[in-house]
Image 1 (tube, rainbow, N blue to C red):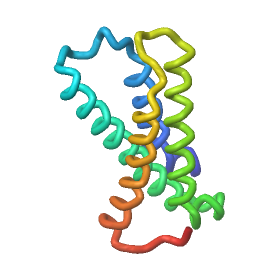
Image 2: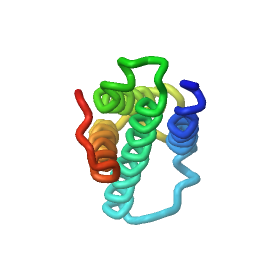
Image 3: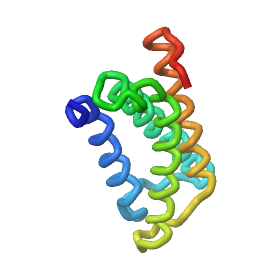
Image 4: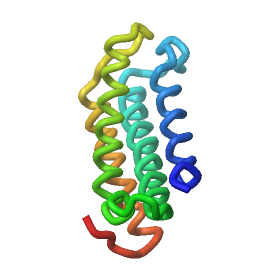
Length: 128
């Protein structure tokens, strides 16, 4: 039941990894300012959706009550750590990408946005 409830979050995490691991020469050309702005917005969007999927998946499963009742905290932790792992992988593997603290901050901001979206969509406060 746990895996079935969390298939969206797991699939989205794999999608994020594939996007962030793709070589930078495959990205469309754009001015530096437009690219930086779009890049951060994309990170925020990707991690907001990831956080939302994690919370929904954890709330739907009943096997691990700790995950269920503290899903927002776990979504923030998982999103933040996953973002740092991806940035570190970009540093270690040469794909034309590099570690960027601003991307890591955007990932955390996206995770926080996902928590807010959950509350907005489902209309209830969850316990921390």
